[in-house]
Image (tube, rainbow, N blue to C red; front, side, top):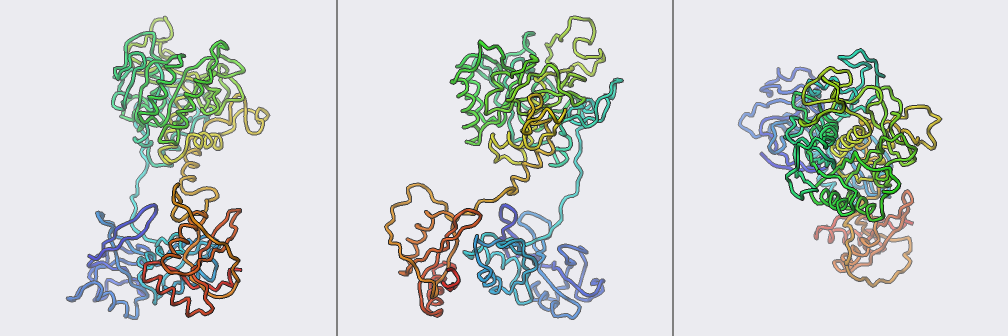
Length: 621
């Protein structure tokens, strides 16, 4: 099989040409009746019927050339396989071409005409969809040729292959139907208690959108106390646990005073393992950081540990509203450092609970401008009356206040009440299993948001911590009275109730290039690229030269000019344009009175591997 490498999506595919299969477009419906067709393999792939040709002692290239001449055949193409794959690939014949910024229509047609391409759609001034004609080379080869032309930013051939058809399978954990905060159906399945349908975090919708329950590349650090590392929903997810109090990976367990960390962690990331509950990001890895403290040294220690050991999201369901213990600038710097330096400079996403004191100001930790401050709302889409309020609230998330959350329970947890029976763990006294209990507060809302942040990073790990916070704010659902929002913000709800589905969709949009793209830069300038001496002379708008590209950085222009002058001993002309408020530079080599002189330079440049096109300087005025 002959081999060909093409650009596809965000990478490249190495293709192997099939030795027997070809694609045919025919005026007749039953190609199988033709003597040159041994077998019809697929009825439709990229608009072609894929068939096995009778070889008749000839290779596939010869046989395809012969078949193309038959009257009933409108078009024939080779079939390929990606290296290491058994999926057949057919080029549809269309090529999506993005030209460099400010490339003129005349320049674009020069490129298209060289390969006998026909425009079938113009998307904008720089983007066209073109298709090959009978006089064009193979569309895959054409796309490769185009990619090496300086005027072309991107050339991607349209290819077709088969995709997997599958449905997202929701978790089958036995307590999953009790988790109304993931998807609220309007009732509690084993209690006579009505709740508000749709008053949830839209987590299941987010899973369905991305086709899974998040990535196991994402690490959620939960800083807290009382982690049951033997719990069935947590034990197989551990990643670099650390105990701040004993400064080791041996996290202390069994102290009845500390049980809070176990349910908090489970809301964020409980495993989907067929029993119990599931967290918002059940595939995420779990970094338990045990030992909360107000100490400055401990604060620096906990966040430095997360930075240095790969935490992506940090969940903190603790803080203080005591004015005597406001955050010092040094503590604020410790948090800012994690947001600035974590995740290789993209920043750890830090989530804090605003507190359960029913106050008109939030926990001092959650008031930090770099964190996501989480308030609580209820299963009826109302403000949880215990949840602190303030202008620093970023978002709210479902928790108790009406019906509680189901969460994991540490094996040594003695419950919140000394009453006999299961009232210690369950609001209605009805047990849902020994490993679980009812839970709530902003302590539960906070890790729910942390888990959703992990889903966001699962689909777009390049987002910064600041961008994740902005995504949550832009995509939240406004609940409560509209009068409570000023400039889109409420002191109770922040920017609204978190919507995991919309947040994930926005993260995907940003990954796919949402927003106004910056002009693409060729050969990005690094520091220390040398000194340049140059003499600026106004160029008359007449004559001919060879245009080699368009650039968005003037430093690149200087670098290229030096190389071109040295290689071809010809003047370098720079044409300056404005595009969407940004400056774009076109480089032309040579200043000739006749076109033939420019053609001679073009050939000389081509011989040394430099692509360029003849340019009439008058057109650039």
